[in-house]
Amino acid sequence: MIRINLGLQGGGAHGAFTWGVLDRLLDEEDIEIAAISGTSAGAMNAAAYKAGLVAGGRAGARETLDWFWEQVGAVNAPWVQDWLAALAPSIAGMAAILEVSPGYRAFDAMSRMTSPYVFGALMRNPLDKILANMRFEDICSDAGPALFVGATNVRTGKIRVFSGAEITTDALMASSCLPTLFRAVEIHDPTTGRVEAFWDGGYTGNPALFPLYAKDLPDDIVIVGINPIVRDAVPDTPEAIANRINEIGFNTSLLRELRSIDFVRRLLAENRIPAGTMKRVLVHFVEDDALMNDLNVATKTIPVPIILARLKAAGREAADAFLRAHKHDIGKRDTVDVNALFS
Image (cartoon, rainbow, N blue to C red):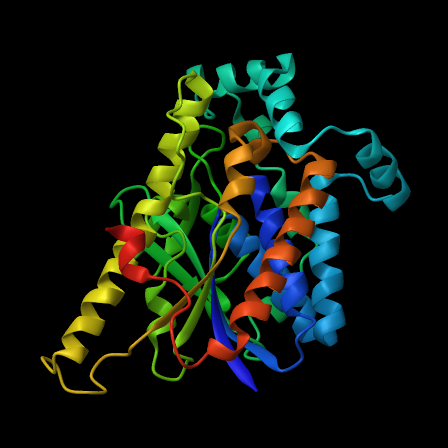
C-alpha cells in the first residue's frame, strides 16, 4: 500500500479542481491517504472526502464529493449541465465574460466599499446550509485520514489548526471566511481561553504543511495547487490586480514552509543535525497553472456549474498525468524542484 499525505489549497470555486484530483485518486486502490491538511475550499474537500470514506468507502467518498459540489453549483441535473456545456465558450472566454458581467461588477464594488457587518445575517456564508447536512461524526472519527483545517486568528494574526473533534461547522466556516464578504467566525478557543474571531486560513497557511510532519505519517506530501505561483502577464485592471494580490498572499505561507523543508534537508545532508531528529519530507505537486492563468477572481467567487465541471475534469486529468509519471517515485524522491519554487 502506498501511503501519502495531501495538502489542499483554498481558492474559492476553483476548489472544484481539487474535487477532480480526489476523484482520480479514489481510482487507485493501492493508494491510501493518511492525512489531509486543507484550507478554505481545500478544507471543504477534505471534510467531504472523509465523511464519505468513513461512511461508505471509496464509493461513498466519491458520492459525497459529488453531492457537495452539486450543492455549491446549485445545478443537480446532469442533462442540464451537459446541454449548457455544449453551448458554452472556452473556460477562458467564460471567465472573461463573467468578470465584466453587470452582476459581478455590482457584487465586486459592494464588497470593496461595504463592510459585511452592515448587512447582518444577510451576508451569512451560503456554505453554512450545505455544511448543516454533513456528517461531522464521520468527519471527526478516528477512522480514515487525519484531518487538519487551517484558519487565521484575527486578533493575533496567527494560524489556528483545528483537528479531531475541533472540526465543526464553525471551524470549516472560519477556514473559508473572506473578511470582505462575511463576518469573522467566532469560536471559543481553549488554547487561549477566550472567544476568538477567525478569517480565511489562506492568509497564514494555504495549506498548513507542518501538521503533516508527524513521525507516524508518511514522508510524502502531495500538494494540490489552485493558486498559480507564476503569472507572466502583469495585471492592469482593478480586478486582475486584486486577484494577483490575493494569489501572492495565499501562496506566501506555502512558499515559506517549502523553504523550511529545504532548509531541514540541507541540515540533514550536511550532518548538522542527527538523523531522525527531523523528518525528510518528500514533496509532490498536482496543478494546472496554465488553466488557472485563464481564470480570474470572478470564477473564484461565483460557482458557475459549467466551470466547476470543467475544473473537475481538469483536476482528474492533472492527477492522472501525475500518477502516470510519478506514482513509482512516491516514497523514494521528490517530483518537484522545491528550491526552484521559492528561489
